[in-house]
Length: 265
Ligand code: NAD
Ligand code: 0WE
Image (tube, rainbow, N blue to C red; front, top):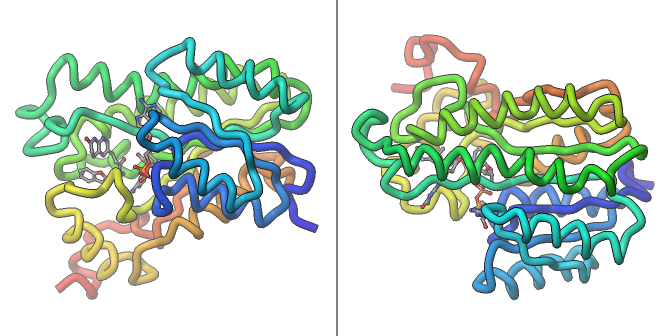
């Protein structure tokens, strides 16, 4: 029997079979969880429906996290199918394309800053607020995805780094707010993976190569690996963990002076 048997999970952030959210969904399904999915827009509807089908789920609801009405409607509709929700996965990040090129100071604009923080950080609180009633009193767990750019200045990640810093603080404040209701809130900080969100990022291949040469495990990570840790963090096996950022990055973030340690030459 899987360690998520009897749990019900809502997965927000599947866009393709490469999505980190898809790796999480598969891992949770393998551990016995029952799943529901959201899709950002009509263009993604059929793709997400197909992926949901592979996890024996027929709950596929629209949700652009920029709109409170759509968020509320997700939980209203979910409430007609399920009497409660155990797990909420937030695997959403976005900044306007022009924010992710060149240096931070050249790229950042008031509008780019606002959109990045709204979609990539506020949306976690918005989903938590709206999902709170369905999750109350059942050892619930909320999980989001971060990146090392939250705590290090990385090339081109720019305002997304600020938004991820905000997201990680959001995890701590939500953990504090929701802990008394039995809801835990955590993040996985994943190493770089070639998903849609990485497509078209200049130098992304170079970043992956750098990780593969220097990380302690001398490789990058997979969505399956992120999925397994996420499933654990959302299970009762992790009942003592909340407000935490767990790195799934082949060890990359522990390094200092990486280029002097061999590998990266
Ligand atoms: P992805 O493109 O597959 O997923 C991003 C998701 O965000 C998509 O499903 C997209 O529909 C959704 N999204 C964007 N704007 C939205 C909106 N307004 N409303 C609803 N959904 C919206 O890419 P991914 O790499 O799987 O990204 C998932 C998460 O993982 C993001 O938070 C990303 O920052 C994080 N992450 C990615 C990497 C990486 O290297 N790929 C590393 C660490 C963390
Ligand atoms: O968080 C991310 C992806 C963030 C992202 C990507 C895009 C591309 C398309 C946010 N918004 C957009 N907007 C778009 O229009 N990652 C951790 C993956 C990623 O993105 C980078 C990276 C890494 C790693 C961007 C620049 C530098 C490194």
